[in-house]
Length: 72
Length: 463
Image 1 (cartoon, rainbow over the protein chains, first blue to last red):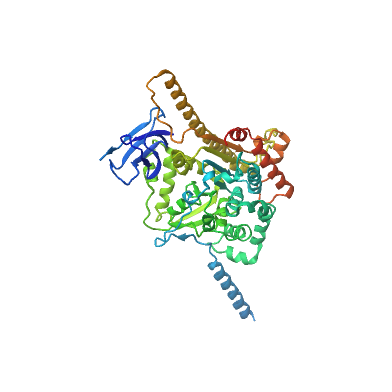
Image 2 (tube, each protein chain N blue to C red):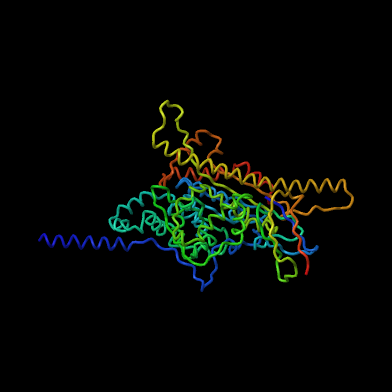
């Protein structure tokens, strides 16, 4: 498995991975190795970018890939 | 007179050909875009709130009546296993049952009829000579006419028998209407590319087909369509403007990164190309995975189990694999002359299947151990930080926290007594066993679960 942490300026929000709601921001999420589309649950869609494509590999729970969304 | 006889002969022949031409297997129906309906997918199956934190998966292998009876024994033992401090049993906690071939009869019967399994299943299935009844059906002259049709085969006769005598004409709509878990996944094998084919709403959507109207008996027949003895079961892959699901579209980019993920998506991509693949021919699920655990790999890696773990909804995850493989001890290596053609053919079929099953269980065990190790690493790091750093830094928590996870592998290999092991390994793969053999299988299934060290360890402080 690979590890991902999604940040949204310290705000708690549900995370959407591959169009499926999974876990919340600021938690280390276990995700299968490979290409994934990451977003946040809305409304409100007050974040940007709306969608980020990442390739998850070679991560650990202590060094997860960080994906950050900014408020707009 | 001769002229009349000839006319009579022609008349009979025409009627025969007409009747044969009319015989057709029941078609899977197209999805109706005008009437969106509740689908047969895991999310639509609810579980009482008090049982939600414990996720129990049961996989039931192939192996004819031997597998069906062993599975029955395990279910019965789970029903006897009470959960401390509650009035529930371990069987009440089962969320998913994934089945193959012989195990599909037990799994589907329980998913459809619940506790009726323990009163009626023996007489409805286990104690019957199913293969004898099938032979009678084949010997019936009326069926000769039907079997002469290119669109009606032995598997369709088998499905009719199961539908009539075991599953009471129930469809996936009936399973869906129960609305409560366990969610049943019946597995077959797509002969075209050898991939696992599961009878679920997700899979049927790729065919542009409605699973709810499909008979459960036909799914079980496909799952247990043993090569050569039974013919493949066919489905229509309806044409239409269908698109790959987002996760499959992304997975197709992962050939060099994650071959397993790519492979699963690639199988689905074939169904989307209905113009070039207008039909699907299915055989015994054991050809792709004889223990039904590959479906659980998918749920754990990327589907519903993964979602629930990341959402923190699972506190305990227990996977019980009931594997009825029989390893005839044989004496090949006692003879100087090489084994017969039949023995070689049998070994050719079973060696690869058993090795793959073994690796599947160990692969899943590795996945679970990896999760446990990561939980421990996180905890150990936080402990060291707390001891040596003074700023109170908290390591981000692994979603789902510290879950209790376990995999329990039930097979005759786990029997300590060599004589008893040899007895069960010597039972044939057929749909006809004696009452004594069936009872012994039921008893040993319960005992194998109750005495399994991994099971005892999991249950010790899980609740």
